[in-house]
Length: 407
Image (cartoon, rainbow, N blue to C red; front, top):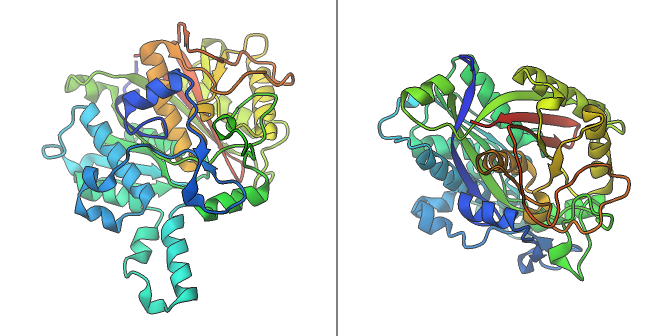
């Protein structure tokens, strides 16, 4: 244990598996797929998505919810959960020492789309005067700061689908540098919108399994054909371990390492050899002062696109040589929440360490023969997990790797 060890003391989750941590963990451990036909997507080519069930933003956040884009609502609810879970009272903390870092991929689609349509179909004077504040990428971090009285460093980071993990890595660095004492870090995204669906569909990135939508998201399976859009948010409370002990807050896990890299290869495709991924993993392990043999589990990016899955699998096989650890992907159950995925999966990684249980990869029935890994399938696996990786990659070649250790 060093002065810079970072404790995870609180979790908040709002996902297609459920509107809180407990229901999300239950859904993922059961391998319960949440993808379904989405009537709100209209007549787009791929009307499948994973939505958060039973989410009533007004009931949870009050009247002011009207000024927030949906990704902001998701982020704020997750932040409230995480702070309560950490046994923190915003009324009594020193807000100047509390940071907020929220990763976002490409939001606020609904606000921008609605305003654009009004301008084209009606008149520019019909758009809301709050269009720009609602549409800013930093709106999630800003609203959390307003609601919770967090006045320390506050920002949005964006590295596409690695954004949530990048935010947590940035928070770790801020805490280690003494820039804050508490950090609320994570990601949020609400991409289940015709604009997002059509855009990814045109790229050929989405599963087109319209005849069986619940089975559309199937990472590492031989019959996979793309990912499924999903919405959600994950927020973690991070503190220096010594500070957490001083206020007698239990550490749920330790954030031991963070590594980042950029492929510098292609705007959408990963480097074919996984070179950038390997660099980020190596940096994260070095930051954690661990070796590959210390890692018992990998929470994979595992989107369900054939290219991503094969490159990630081959890279992990090379890094871990003769003994690859057990691998899983939460996206079979929850879909792909883009900028929120890295944060949601980091929270699931914390729960894996707490419960010593690796969730299965939902919808994995026949492993792609080109993927030579121990991918957990069908049912959760009870096993010893002392340290693990949580992997995230984003368009543009952004790679973010988190190393978490058992408390």
